[in-house]
Image (tube, rainbow over all chains, first blue to last red; front, side, top):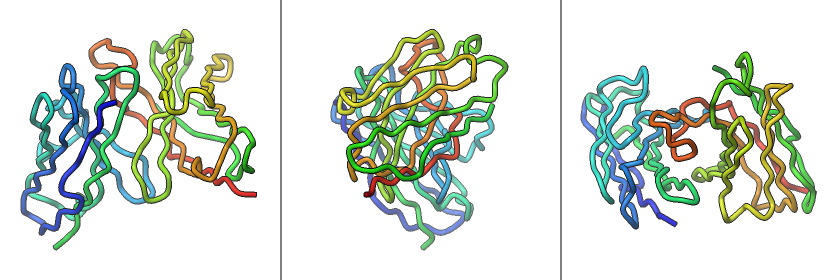
Length: 109
Length: 124
């Protein structure tokens, strides 16, 4: 099983700044099958990035993903107040299961 | 595309949870899509439970496989989850979702459409 470790657990920033969220895998993620999700309180997760660096439909270009192998990053530029929620990474390449990171909470400083 | 979970909000320990996900497509059997169940304990992270292809092939989380059955009911445009021998550790919000099969890898794909989720509490 691939274990995903997200850091930091909580990130405190101000609106307008940029956020860098990390997701590290315990083993290589095949085919860069790594996704990022945003989850607002009381809502289902929303797909932001797939294939490590591809934005999902209707996702603003303020959100970008990068990385390969075992180290992946989600960057959010020009933070808006609605961005201060929880983010999860997910790998979907290893068989026989998908795994998620434990989440990073982005909070207003 | 919309998905909606339905089922009991309260289950007793040792009982079987039965959930259904209704999908707003013309026909789940002709959509060619892959579907999944995912859960999230209160205040915690996400856990994949199982997935199913409209034609019936399935994919299970090994840690839950012995207690889980996923199935599709094409006549109702639904797919369903059964989780046996429920305990307090199974208390969670249960989501149904669609696999975003962007490169024809089937189950090896993320999730682009989700239901709103349904909270299931295990308690006597």
